[in-house]
Length: 68
Image (cartoon, rainbow, N blue to C red; front, top):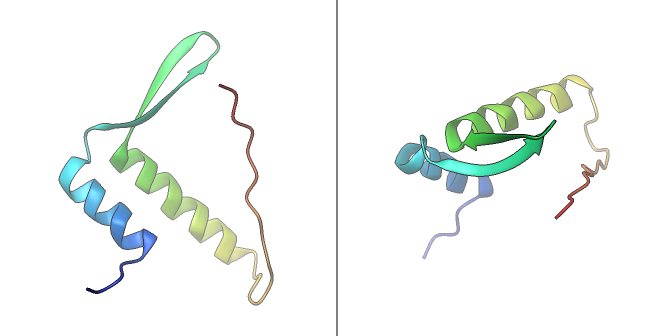
């Protein structure tokens, strides 16, 4: 069996379930729904931005706060 990358998993998910809700969150007491295709587009933009920083061979971390 061939192993697949996270990128391939996300691309397949968008292809099959792009309009489904990936996650929800509250912003100023309003429920926001993010669909898989929107999530994918945000990831692509983040990747492009990180590449623009010219951090080749550098270690980076993406840290976020999750309140449950």
